[in-house]
View 1 (spheres, rainbow, N blue to C red):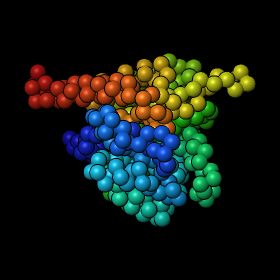
View 2 (view 1 turned 60 degrees about the horizontal axis):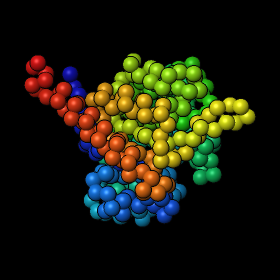
View 3 (view 1 turned 180 degrees about the horizontal axis):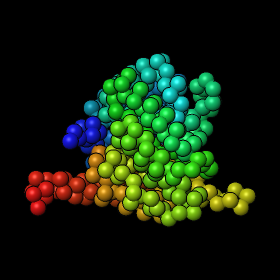
View 4 (view 1 turned 90 degrees about the vertical axis):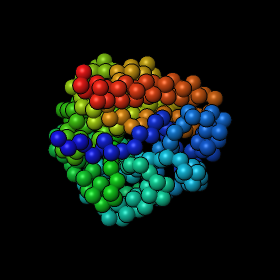
Length: 299
């Protein structure tokens, strides 16, 4: 049997998120690495065509450090949105920083023509047809850019459609043959809205297709009596998010990367969690390597 193509992706380790200008008000990855060597292995840079690459990620890449490119401006649920201009310029930006792969929230970033004034990021409609459309977009991007694409489950306060979000992305991965980016904080938000336990549905989810994990802090808020979670990227993840991380890490046999989304906080606020995530990732990687060794297979 041919191994899934995402098995060829490099193992990056634990990384930090970044967006245009985030280093000016938050964490500069090179300075953080100098102060705390070994905690950050790569930068996941999120941007769109209008804002492009900033000096922060260019300096990181110029130092020979690993990156991934997280697009923030295409509606994967709408294959027609993946136009020639977007494909060309996104691939150009990713290659300029040596990105190991592309990733992005499989939601709706805009209505009508692409515009920086939108940036709403609504979740996809959770139906089979929508999942197949997302898979079509992924195939189109991969064919045009030569880079693998990891779709991410987006945040949301309301979801339409009859599928559980894990079932939706399982369909996307099966149809497109792609790996997955599981955002643990976003999944925790969805589970709360559905009245489910944080780890509900994970036992039937293809965790062997999870290539990347995201971990981030959130704020519990009350909106006119409705309890919601704001995807704030504050330093401390909620307990529900940690529960998902702890369930997934030992079972994600294809895991290559874990991103701690904390780019706009103070360095001293995140060091402890970087250490915690680094130790957990290393332990999971060691266990995965041991289970896939020839000796383990013979046993």
